[in-house]
Length: 273
Image 1: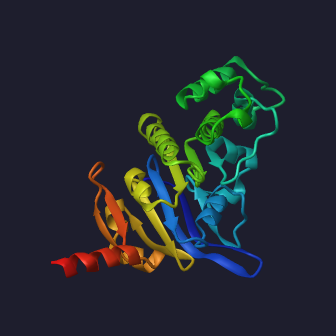
Image 2: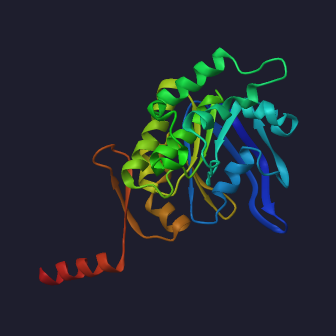
């Protein structure tokens, strides 16, 4: 694995509560890594720590072999872009104004806004399909459109790595696919390293090169979707009995959960036979 981001004995928590305990994680460069696990397992906490929004209790997070604790906030912002779980834009701010904020880490007293900055912002809006909305208030957009604007802002930072915390939450299925297709394009075309926290296991299996399943404050399983998404993992991590079949479209693992209703249908079918 060509690792750019890694954690060594990383422990995270809040006051006396430990959420992640001595976790060692390697995130492959130039790939889409998706973190999965039951609610409260520490997925978002881990992502926030990697983005240096949460200070570790112990252990280190390394970026290209350098302890991130030794890097300035501005230096990290030039190399990592993060889209948090909850995003709120100031009232009245337009799409272009919000995307321009992605260039602020690159501004200094000697280097103010430039033609190059304007070009980068335009390219970010075009690649995410929001250029035609440049003058519209962000609050006037649909959920999927707003997410694309926020992703455009992270692209304007021109970082190698994007960290996205549940970017499809509260979106309908069409917009979920739209956002994940965009992430796929950014990875395939621009070579971005992308780390995503995602709840939908079937979508995670479709889009991930590398999956990490968390349980009991550490990694339960990691690897390709085929290696991670198994009936045993679903039982142990999500306490859910299911069948794992091949997705007929992408040929990736797809989970079919059991339920009382499904069980009754099976019983009726067997009885009829």
